[in-house]
Image (cartoon, rainbow, N blue to C red; front, top):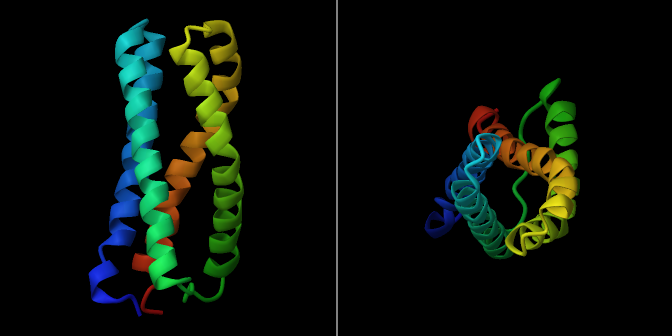
Length: 144
């Protein structure tokens, strides 16, 4: 049971992950059109959304602890496969995003592009699976 004062955090975290995904998609579309300044703004906003997510996520779990997954049958291996890949890549994405952002902000575009080819899809996966984990944990199977 989540204490009432912390009950909004899971939805907030999913919203921040979803916002990051939208910003990542938008930023990618903008750079494909050569709109560098708008791309930069979207990607900085995605970093901010992801950093806010991480802070809120850590605070929530520090205060509330772990939340048990209540789904049964087929949903358990699906959930844990998504969760394990999400958490593993979320840890990896932090330094990748920082390096990618730094290279872009320092106008080292060749190096930025080289690492962004790896960073973007991994970060996108982490953002989208974060929303999926939220729905599986707090919505779809919360009352099984």
